[in-house]
Image (cartoon, rainbow, N blue to C red; front, top):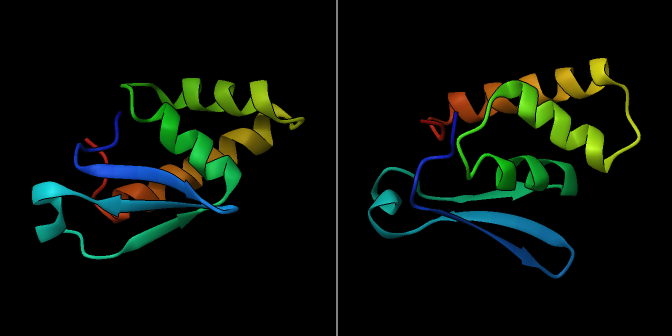
Length: 87
């Protein structure tokens, strides 16, 4: 799975925001605010990765057990799918 093209993640002060660019603005008009953890997942999803690879990315950065990381990843993926942001 992968984030659709046409979205840009930027750090502004202490916040991470995602905005649509180019033609993507026609179908997504708004801003997505992310925390540090979800920004890491977003950056990882800029490449074509599996859910397991997302979990591994969290485990490599944070002191969390696999079960908690897997639940967090599943929730994040669900939200992205609801917003139609994934390929």
